Length: 421
Ligand SMILES: *Cc1c(COP(=O)(O)O)cnc(C)c1O
Ligand SMILES: [Zn+2]
Image (cartoon, helix red, strand yellow):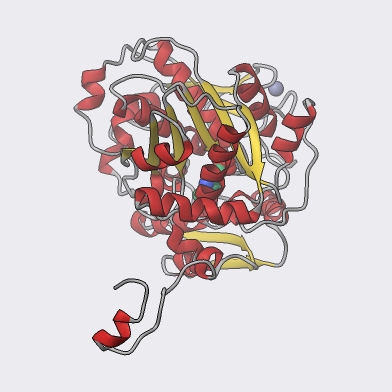
C-alpha cells in the first residue's frame, strides 16, 4: 500500500477537538494527527486516540439536534457547527411494537437512519471526513462507494463548496447513480466490483496530491462518525445501553464503531456498565464475515459478491476481523440471509412499521428474524435493529413483489367485484 500523499499541512490548534493522535489498532504504535491511515510499523489500521474531558449528559442534551451534539467525542473542532455540512444524525428511534409482536420480541426498537440528509447512515461518517478534509486543506473530496457513500460525499461536497469525485461499480442501482450525479459532475462508473473500485481509489490517492478519499486516506476520521449511531441509541433510550443490537456489516466499520461508542459512554460514566450482545448481518451472496464466524476461524476469506444487497457488497471487509472479535466477545453472532429473505425483510418492516428500507435494512431485519428462529437472540431482552438506508434507492428489489391488487374501471361495480368491497 502506498503512503498517504496529502502534504503535511500545518494544522490549526484544536482542529481535531479532543483527539490527541492516531493509534494503531494492531500494535498500539502512535502517530501524530494527519492524513494517515496505515501504521508505519505494521500496516494495521490507525484509529483516533483521545483525551476526553469530563462530558455531562446535560452538555450533550443542550447541543444541536444532529451529530455535533457529540462533538466533544469526535475528531472535529469546537466550532464545527459554523462550517457548512449536511448536519446529519439525531434520527428517530422507534418502538417497533408490530414488528416485535410479529417476531415474538418483547421489547424491540428500530433506529431509523434512512431519514438522514441523503437517506443513509453514510451522512454521519462523511460529515466527520469532510471536517478532516477541510483541516488538511484537501482540494478534492472523493470516495470509492457501494452507492450510499457516493451520495453522501457528493451532497456534502456540494454544500461545502469543495470539488467532489465519486467512484462506483458500473452495475449499481440507477437511483443510487442519480442520487450522486445530481450533486456532482464527477460520478465515475468503474467496470468492476466494489473491491476493484476501492483498489483503484487507493492507487489514485497514492498518485494525486490533495485528494481526500473519505474511506481510504482519511478513514480514521471518517470511521468515527459511526460512533454517533451508538451515542444516539443510548441517549434516546434514556442514557441506557440496549441488551442486544443487530447491525449490518459491509466493511464492518459501523459495527465496530457502535461498540466503541458504547464502551466510551461507559468509561465516561454517561451510561451504566452492563453486558450487551452485538450481532452482525450479511447477505448470503457476500457473507465473508458470517462464514468465518460460523466456521469458528479468525481469518476472513475474501469473496466475489453476488447479492441484491449492493450497499453491503464488500468482498474483502477491512474491519471484518474486528466484527468477529466483538460479536464473539459480547455473546452475539454474525448471520446471513438469502436475497429472497432480504426482499421479505424489506416488505416485513414496511408492513409492520411503515418504514421503507433498502436492501441493507432488509438484510438486517431478515437476520433479526433468523436469529430469533434459530434461538441465537434472546426475545425477552431489549433489542435494537438498525435501518441504515432508504428503500427508494433500491426499488427494483421489491418492485416485482408489490403493486396494485387490482386494476379496475372507475365504477363502483368494478370496485365491488374486487375482494376489497
Ligand atoms: C455502508 C453501508 C453499511 C455498512 O457499512 P460498513 O461500515 O462498511 O460496515 C450499511 N448499510 C448501508 C445502507 C450502507 O450504505
Ligand atoms: Zn501497527
